[in-house]
Amino acid sequence: MTLDDLRVLVAVCRAGSLSAVARDLGRTQSAVSQHIRRLEKETGTALVERHARGVVPTEAGRILWAAAAEGMAGLDGALRRLDDLVHATGGSVRVTTGATTVRHFMAEAIVAFRHRHPEVSLEFRTENSSRGCFDSLAADDLDLAWITIGAPVRGVEQRTVMELPWVLAVAADDSLAARSHIEPADLAGIRHIRLPENSTSRAHLDAALAAAGVRIDRSDTSVADWDTALLLAELGLGHAVVPALPGWSVPGAEGPLRLVPVPALPALPVGWAVRRWSTLAPPARIFAEEVARSRTGRRAGRSIGSAEVADAGGSSGPAA
Image (cartoon, rainbow, N blue to C red; front, side, top):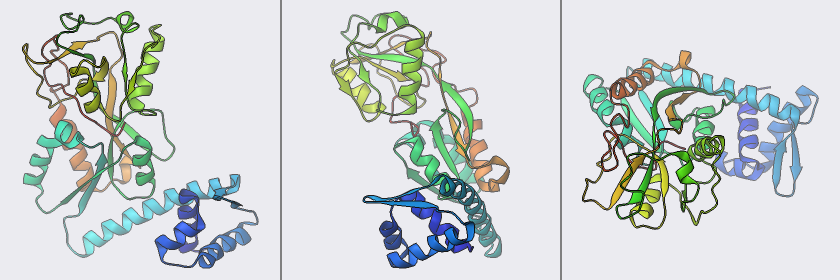
C-alpha cells in the first residue's frame, strides 16, 4: 500500500469515475484500476463497486477513503509548510467563500494583514456551497473557508465569528415597509422570494419559521443568491427574508428598498471552517484571527430600523 495508491483511491471515490481520474492524473484507466486492485488485494476486500455510470465506494471503501483523505490532507499541508520553510518564503493563505463575502466581511482585515505580513501570499477562491468548501478542505486545496455555520461535518471544524439578524426586504411602497419590525406570524401571508435551494441559510430560515408555526404558502420565486433576492424585493416582485450583512450601503428613507427587522427569528451564525485549528499554518491562523478581530464591535444590525440598517447588507454572502 503506497501513498500513490491512497491518493488514487481518494480521487476515485470523490470523482465517482475511473476515467475522470485517469484524465486528471494523465494516466490510463488501466493504471488507475491497478492502484485500486492493489489496495483491494492488500485489504482483502472490495473497495469500490463498478456501475454503468461510474464507481461508488463500498462500506470498506468509505472507511479507507475517509481515513486516507484526512491523512493525505494533513501530509500535504505539512509538505507545503516545509516547502515554505526550505525556500524561505512567507507562506500563503488560501481562502474560499461566496462571491462577495470578501467585501462584506474581510476588507479591513485584508488591508491590515497585508500591511503586517507583506511577504505572505493571499489567494481567494469562490465556492457556491458549503459542501464545495468542505470538499476542498478535505482535499487540502485551501486553508480556510468562510461559511454559514451548519450541522457538524466529519473532518471539519467550524467556528462562529458573528451572528447575523434577519430582515424583511420589501419595496418602499409595500404595506409592510413602514413597520418598525416584523413578527414571524406576519410572514405567513406574504409572497416569499426563497433563498438558494439546499443552502445552509435557507435551512436555518425554514427551521426558524417552522418553529414559529409559520407555513410558506406563497413562493413564486427562488433565487441563486441573496443579492438577487434583494433586487427582486426592491422591484416589488415579492418579499425576501435575508440576513443583514456588514458593508452594504442601505438606501435611505427616499430609496426604493426597505429592510424591516425580524428580531424574533434566531440569528444566522457565520464564520470559519478548517480541517483542524491545531494544525493550521501560522499565516492562516493569523489571518482568521484578523478577520474575527475586525468584526469585533461591528456586529451586523446593531441598529436596524425600517429605513436604515447599520453595518448591514445583502450579498451572495458566505458559501451558504
